[in-house]
Image 1 (cartoon, helix red, strand yellow):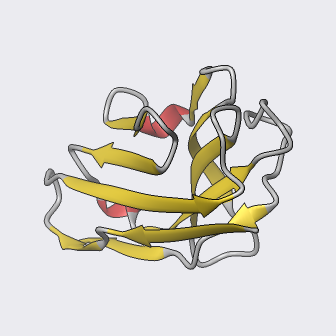
Image 2: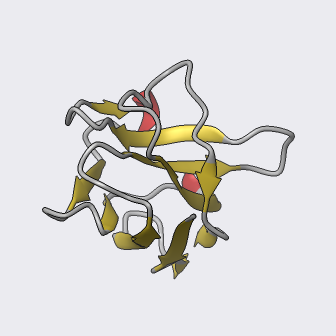
Length: 122
């Protein structure tokens, strides 16, 4: 089993900063794919940023230069540093992981998800 717990969301002013955290436990190792996704009031979640098991990092274009994804040495905690937040960043943010795939960029959907943490920029 893989367990993921997000924290750090909340209300912020436009232009503000926020750091999201994801605590991972269970069958997570150094080759686990990890990422942050967000969901607007719509039908699909979308990838914000991810780190592959090989260390490859992918960012969604609207967050490049503003958001930074990072991971601790043992891949037990994942972070998303968000700066210069905009109202259109408002969404539910989810941590995701997949120990069975080193690749978790475009075209791949992880198998395990956290409960989500709400970010509201207004």
